[in-house]
Amino acid sequence: MKKSYTAGFKSRVAIEAIKGEKTLAELASIYQVHISQIRQWKSKAMEALPRVFESKKEKRQQEQEIGIDDVYKRVGQLEVENDFLKKKYRQFGIELK
Image (cartoon, rainbow, N blue to C red; front, side):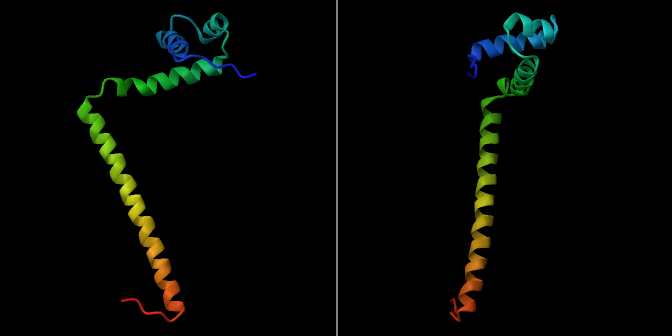
């Protein structure tokens, strides 16, 4: 059966690993968690830390950029589909206006 851990537990272990006062092997023994799991939680915490200190303005800009990227992706997909359909219509001798 797969063990599941709370976010609080994961963050506590990750903070301990980041502090570096104890080795990963010691932490694994104390918390009864595999070393690779501790490494994973630590790296995830390190990745997330910069986002904690971002301003609301920076977060909004990132969200807008992601939204714009999605729009461009969708437009490109629709252009490809449109070109495909135009070719198919021409194959059947149908003229588009």
